[in-house]
Amino acid sequence: MNDSRALSLASVRGALPVARQAWHRALAELDATATRMLGRDFDERMQRVSEQVGPGGVDPFGLDPDWVKYALAGAAFLHRKYFRTEVQGVENIPDGRVLLIANHSGQVPIDGAVIAAAVFLDRNPPRIVRSMVEKWAQTLPFVGTFFGRCGQVVGVPENARRLLDRGEAILVFPEGTKGISKPFSQRYKLADFGLGFMRLALETHTPIVPVALVGAEEQYVSLANVMPVAKLFGMPSFPLIPQLFVPGGQLPLPTKYHIRFGEPLVFEGDADDDDAVIEEKVRVVRATIQAMLHRGLKERKSLFF
Image (cartoon, rainbow, N blue to C red):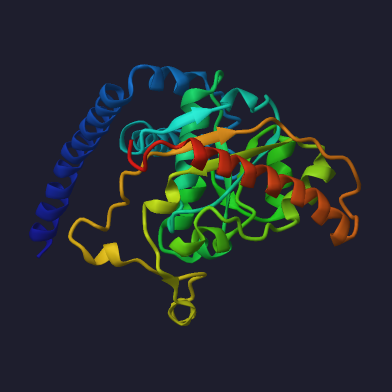
């Protein structure tokens, strides 16, 4: 019995170096593939981005540069190859703390990943975007850890303030889950915005860059949001998407994305003002993004090209 255990332990110890070498070879091949697909500027941009990380290799929110690299490689593929995104106005994003306020759409949060890829790949110098994610996402197995390692944080005011104090760029979708779960009949019609981002901007004296993304509304065509099913599974929404039942339809349609970054908006006032006062300022941001969406739709030549 002891001899059998000893042989098993020896076999495990002997296999570990082989597994470790295979893992390193896989990572090296992944790096090479990313470079071939995205160009050498991807590695150069990763080197140029200076992350404020602690001695343990991660920042206070759990961001790990190694995870960020591979997450950005995947997002960059979607940005440059799959959705072939056209970007306008990325130079409007200032250095230092900034709130990127965008429309939300597409049934799954691919839009956030592509916006982050655009800011990283198309802005000089590149910036890492930190997104505010819904609390319910942290309840999904492995998702919370993955988001944290990639720099995304739970969307509560305390986290946002700390990030802005560090001079970060934060992406916020004020429509929340109402935006991402809109049926096809409501495409590009902005849902009501929350007020939290404006109170945060006023409190921290942070400029707001409006962002409009055209193309994501058509990647998954949702006929309705089935709330009874959503409540049954504890989800914020349950879209009815017929294409998911077609072979290959689980992938989003390769629509062409168009992203516009507007000029920064700066607001003054008291963050503790009444909701009615804050709503007036929020209405300005919402109207700006809606106008940008209308302009983008008018100028769009084709859904896929």
